[in-house]
Each structure stands twice: as structure tokens, then as C-alpha cells.
Length: 353
Image (tube, rainbow, N blue to C red):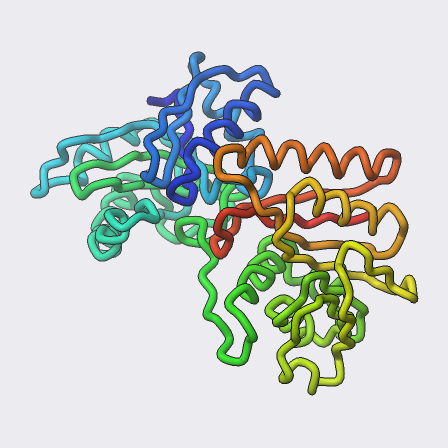
């Protein structure tokens, strides 16, 4: 099991994550296979060579992977745990661990997994005490040391492992949970809120999402994404043939254009941000977003790509290539993530360097 890597994902996306892990591993000459079961919310990637799981973990980070929420080197899978003593087998399994600075006891984001939430919360305290007592866990939390993972799929089954803090998500289960603002025009507002917090650090938000900046929202109605920009002080050109929420128009920060998002052209080239959540073919949206950057119409874009169910990973690869073709010779950075608030879609952040 020391040859394994365990990654969480949204239930139903195990195959997409498996394909991604396979490609990423092959790119650094690590070979293995993915064990998946649809609907379980995780993938176990088993490497053929000893030590390759650690090699792969050092090269990968959750920030780099599209479909993974969390990832760690899996050292042991413990089954048929005795309810009277689950801790002893875990201590035995982690005898060769590096000293860790934090403990996370987690579970899959499934109906069955969520039933384990109370158990995991209660089990964390005695496990932490035992790990500190035998020296596997530092006496106080240390953000500079590896994170110890105990991932329960059932109360009597756990995957045990560790990960470097720079490679993983800072949020429990790799999920950034947000509350829907009561005055937002739609719940889609949460997608952009999450994307901003995932793709931009707090300091980057302060410098690159400043009040007074100009933005364009293509396919804006009723205004869920525009709302997130307005509340951060930006001025927004909202483009859509539908109706915008009156509450947004009353702010004085929104100008409305009843136009097709694919044909709209800003009159002034002072736009920093372009956002888009249109229901359209992913390659077509990717081409449009990249063309805005290529023409110098904006500096950064956050947008969603709706992926066909049978070809999600392939569609993402095609969209990535479309962007590369459009921006040939132009320096840029691209991040992509299947966010918690996304459904059959992924969210991308494209920036001109």
C-alpha cells in the first residue's frame, strides 16, 4: 500500500480523476493503475514501483489537479477494525511515518460518508492523543510538517497516510463551504465566490480585485456572478438578452447590454476582469475567453465550461488545447478546478502574464 496515492473527488467523477492521475503520473514516468468505484468519492492510484507514490505526490498538488479535492500518500488500508480498539492498528501502520504536525480524520463526501462525520469528529481526539504520545504527531500543530490523514470509508475501515502541507487543500475534505448570500440573485453566485478564493490568495485579491476596477460579465442574467464583483467594488458591464436583478442595477455599478455574449465588444479597452457562466459548448467558450485575452480586451478571466457527461476529461483537454492555440506566443497562466459548487462543469482562471 506504500505505493499508493489516495485522492478525493465529487461522487460520480471517479473516472475523470482516474484519467487525470494516470496522465499526470505518466508525464513524470510513474506508472500504475487506478482503483475506482463509481459514487464512492475517491480514487486509489497504485504505482508499480516502490517509492513512486512519494515521487508522484511531490510532483502533484491539489491546486494543479482539476478533479481532485484532496490527495495524500496512502501507506495502509486497515479493514475489520475492532470497535473496542481502532487506535492500535493505526499506530502500528504508521510506525515509519515522518513526524506530522497536524491530524485530519476525514470521510468521503457521500451520503454514507457523511453519516461518519460525528464518529470522525469524536475519534479525532483520542487518536491525536495517541499519536502525540508515541511521537508520530508533534505536541503542538506545526504547519511546516506533513499532515497525517485517516480517511474512513466505514467505521471499521480506514486508509492511513500523509502529505506535505504545500501539496494539499487547506480546507477539511478539500471543500470550501460557503453560505449563499440572502440578497444574491441566484445560487450560481457561490461558484464565482469559491473560484476567487481558490484561485487567488488574499493578497492577490486585494491587489487584483480592487474597488473601482472594470469588469465584463458575459451571460450575466439574473446577476449571480455580477453580484460577487459588485460587492467587491468593481464596475460591471453585464451582457445578456435576459433581465438583470433590479437590486444590482440600483447600485450604480452595473451597465446593462442586451446583446449576445459571443458578439459583444467593449468600447473601452480598460477591462481587467472577464467572467462568464454561459451554457454553451466548452470549446466555444474557451475560444471566446482566450480571444479576449489575445486581443488585449481584458487581463484576467474566470469562466465555467459545461462538460458532456461521457467525455468530461477529454472535453477539458480539448478546451485546454483551444486556449493554447488562441494564445500561441502570448505568455499566460491557466488554472482549472472542479469546484465544490460546480456540477457537470469546471471553473477556469486564465491570466495574461
